[in-house]
Image (cartoon, rainbow, N blue to C red; front, side, top):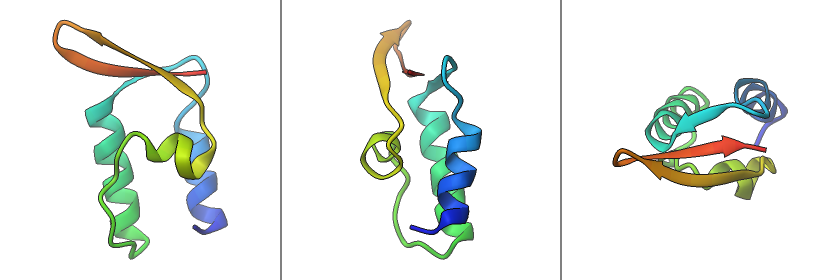
Length: 68
């Protein structure tokens, strides 16, 4: 993981904001592709690789995460 990648992710996903898991997946996937990383973006990468803590919930059939 590069410093640029870490900075981009931490600037995009702000504390107190809500994102659908689909939004996270699409953002990370596009970012990984632009950096030449051959990996699918998944929401759990936020915590696993970037240290961003979140809670999960489901509303009207859509899964969301709230950034802590």
